[in-house]
Each structure stands twice: as structure tokens, then as C-alpha cells.
Image 1 (tube, rainbow, N blue to C red):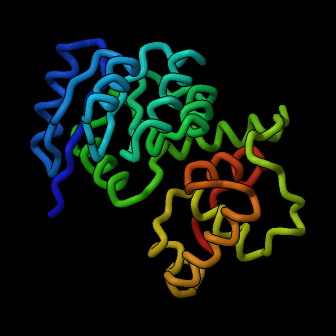
Image 2 (image 1 turned 90 degrees about the vertical axis):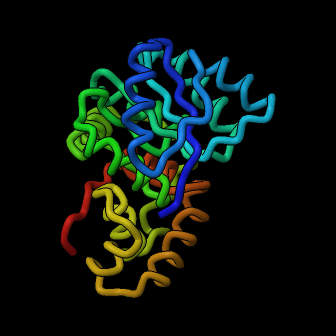
Length: 220
């Protein structure tokens, strides 16, 4: 099993210490504690090189999420956000800022470790029920997406299915099984979709899909 170095970002030192103890029980090793995003950015500039950054949101403000975006630009680490409450607006902003996971601080320890493990395997993890809220919001109050919009006829039916499977939280292997195609074909479709919608990663692709009204596809 792989071992990953983790940077914890949280102003609550007691919570951070407890979280560090919990995370260290899995394949993770705490390499750095930071009290806020600025502190974390400074550590990165000084040579810290975590595989995973776990950042606890204080209020989910635009300023705080802008700091998250700056962290994303400064590090190739995977980034998981922990929030006190599941809010559709802060989820959307966190995904746009480059977060690879949006998790509830109140989730069980087993779920947290499992989610972080999925993040390190390249998955984007967020609550399905919150994604549904985002989809409803996008349908009721259309917003201009940050990634360039693409006419629907430029995405093939299969590419739309791929994006809908992504919203359902499925891995490439699960998508292949669901759509009865090979995993390499899934990867090829993802590459084409990313190019067409001007997305750089699965997170941005998920944001684009949500903002353009696509719904999760559980079974083809």
C-alpha cells in the first residue's frame, strides 16, 4: 500500500491534532501543520512537498476559497476540503478553486479515510445529494460557467454519458463497466471531453457538467 505525506490546514489546533492522529492510522503521514492557507503557501515556498493537503474551511467565504485557489496553483498535491456544513455555493466555489474533495467534518472516521484514499487514487469526491442541489440551482438560476461553454451538439452522446457518470462519482473502471466499454476507451473519451470544454482536470469537468444541467448517471 502506498504511503502519502499530508499537510493539515486548520486554525483549530485541537481539531487539527485529533484529525492528524486519525489520519495517521491509515496510509497517511502528517508532514506539516498550517493554521491557514497563507501559512500553508509559505510552507510550500520553503520546500514542503505534501502529496495531500487537507484544508478545513472556516466560513467558506470567497476570500478563503481564493486562498484555496492559490494553494492549487502552488502545489501539485491533491486537495481535500473539510466543511462544517454542506453548502451548495461553497461546494461549487471549492470545486472551481481546484479542490479534489469536499467532505463533511462530521463524517465517520472510516468514511473520511476511505474518501481520502479515493482522492489519492485520482477521484473527485463530493456528496451526491449536494451535487443534486447544485444541478437544481443551475437549472433554476443559470450562471455563466468559468470554463468556456460548448454547444451540446459538439459533445457526443457517449461523452455526455461519461460526464454524467463522473457526476455520479464513478471511477474510470466503474464507468467502463456501466457503459460496457473498455477503461482505455473511457480515458480516450475523457481526453476528448476535456479538450472540448476547455477543462484541465476531472474537477473542472464536473463543475462544467453541473453548471450545464447534467444529472448523475447511475446505470446506463
